[in-house]
Image (cartoon, rainbow, N blue to C red; front, top):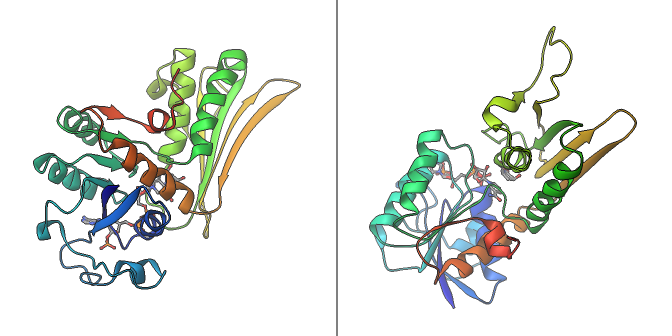
Length: 267
Ligand SMILES: NC(=O)C1=CN([C@@H]2O[C@H](COP(=O)(O)OP(=O)(O)OC[C@H]3O[C@@H](n4cnc5c(N)ncnc54)[C@H](OP(=O)(O)O)[C@@H]3O)[C@@H](O)[C@H]2O)C=CC1
Ligand SMILES: O=C(O)C1=N[C@H](C(=O)O)C[C@H](O)C1
């Protein structure tokens, strides 16, 4: 049994993680954190998640360092880095699902991964991680001569764009084709753009209503195109993946892992 802690327990993902932990018999939720001074401090976690009382109340990072074996963080980049430092100080493995990190923050995650085990993935669903494998194959077969476009849609509350998943999909394609994503990426188009440069990878973003998360990668030629799409209809799919990752990470060596490692999808 892995004892897990959740940062940002009152967030959209925090609440889904509480529910997912309840549904997984390999783990026990023993530490549910909220930010210092949060109005949610001291509330029953089940009531925070809307699933009825569970007999555990939320607390802050200061209120215990031995309360869980592995921590899960889906917050915002600055908070995530703060939580990562707390895990390094307390030698706790961490699963990070937050997106939108700056380059400097990504370097901090790399550095922390030489001190504690870290799973870091922009998307914890099985479907998106399988989609990444399909993209490798598609890019190998069609990537050199097709126009590659990635688009994503998310709810109105999302703060970062393009989504971490869209960027990760672009990275898989760029790596497979031996391209530098920073040089190939086009983030939206407007005005007199001229004809399409065949070496670019285009990104488009939709933010609307309560869309949980949708991603499509398109490889378009004259005469045919392939579109590979993933649609998430519940945050529980990400949360279940993250809880599975936390249990998997409990006894792993110090290193940086991703969901492909957790799911055994690496060649
Ligand atoms: N990897 C994956 O599979 C997925 C990743 N995500 C990513 O997870 C992240 C969170 O998404 P979501 O749950 O929708 O976001 P929410 O805004 O609903 O939740 C954010 C949480 O972070 C807390 N938080 C924010 N700032 C701070 C801070 N400075 N100090 C302490 N706590 C803080 C909030 O607390 P408070 O309410 O007090 O501000 C809240 O609990 C995003 O980056 C999103 O892209 C989302 C889904 C799947
Ligand atoms: O903010 C979200 O909600 C999501 N964010 C992740 C991302 O940026 O890729 C994953 C998922 O699509 C939901």
